[in-house]
Length: 340
Image 1 (cartoon, rainbow, N blue to C red):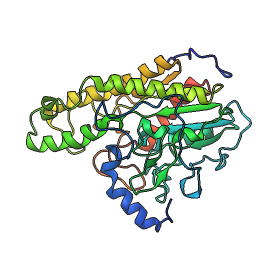
Image 2: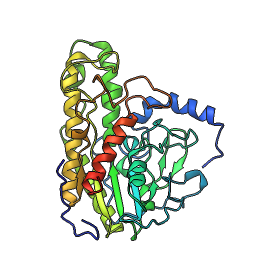
Image 3: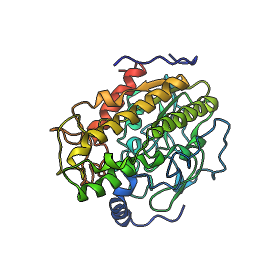
């Protein structure tokens, strides 16, 4: 892909853990909620959520052992410092960054963050890079500046708490949980499909208003500006979403969706990704085109990189990325950074 150059000058162009088996069982049971934005942050509609202002500071508690971010090989719990082109890398995002159940995922981590997700792969590929990964399943843009409660009741500090003036690289991938977009696509549209499997009940109900994507773009642009304010010398990348739904065809064995709603769901997928790209342009940062990188590998494809309705233990949570998708996104990030 062709990297979109940044318009901004850059230095470089809380409770005791339950047994693991019980935590994993809880994680699997809560899978449907994770993809539908179970976080306590974020609103139910365009008027309920507030964009994270660059001036907003979080009152979240300091990171403790029960809320510490994941780290890649070669990194430390307090982010540490490497010795390469990007010594300090901070990853921000939702479950499409956290990659729940992609090996290896610690079942004691309420964010279900994988050590095989794209931030970990990027950090491992760039010599001398120490990663602090605070991505979390269920996160919305308000999780960047306020405490997020995970699906099992853990409180996570604001993701922006991981940023410092010395941060060298930041990736941000989120937006799909804002305004319950994923909740509508996977949850409500699935319910309506049971009532009218051959029609287009989700589109007919007009559940997702046009202004939602404008709102998501604005919130993400504000978030990216907030990143630049906190880490002024960092290379900042906005990471888009993969192709989740097919451009044509159906796969009723993999997703609960009425036949006539596939084009509508695909359009929502495309517009969400376009909102992320637009936000990157507005903030003057690079965009990582995960949508293009995953062409032909939607959840209906012969070789899907997105899991279907059935959670696969040690592979992927339902409706979430598989390892191959994370590898493809990591390759795109490295290409934008000139590290491929």
